[in-house]
Amino acid sequence: MNIILLGPPGAGKGTQAKLLEEQHGMIQLSTGDMLRAAVKRGEPLGLEAKKIMDAGGLVPDHLMIKMIEDRIRKPDCAKGFILDGFPRTVPQAEALDKMLSACGKKLDAVIELKVDEAALIERVSGRFTCAKCGTGYHKKFKPPKHAGVCDVCGSTEFICRPDDNPETMKTRLKAFQDQTAPILPYYRQKGLLKSVDGMASMDAVHGSIEHILGETGKA
Image (tube, rainbow, N blue to C red; front, top):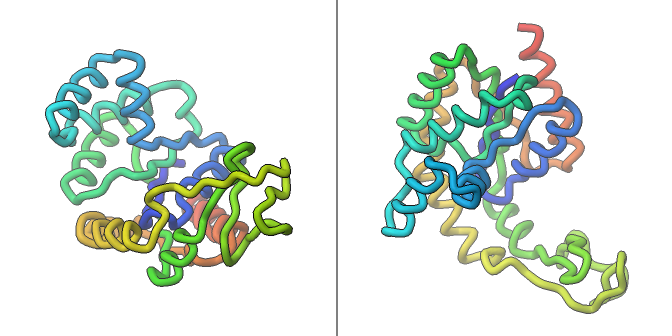
């Protein structure tokens, strides 16, 4: 099963991808992680991309597509893959379709995690983690049992991601709407687009995705 998870930052795509990896043996493909790994390993594609990034440019689509192609040809992707963070534009979606067809593969579903933007900003901007053990908390939805003390390790040091604030989230959400949202009609026209309530609980979202995969598998 080969799928794409779509949704703005903070919608829970990474969390759901990990659950699908654990249960189905599918491989999560985050283009950002793949790019960093290729650069670190000194691979030709990674070095070419690094040269462009160091000059202040954006990695061109053909390089990203080639990187994805090389990755999905590896044996561990035999059970399927989950694309997270790509494609972001219609030309990227078209290039991805062309590459998959050349590889004898196809997309089975494109799953959109729909969110309420105001609620998402509140959810993301209240997050913080224990600096020692990494346990995650939220100022409103999941505070420590004892204020200022980690439930797990007892540490009193906490950190917040610098981009977990309302202003940054609004900018990232606008970028998603401007750049990525236009690919939704592209996949809807192909009959691949399915939507789930991304504001539901983690288990409920996972259940909805599993239902979609089950129905897709019957088709």
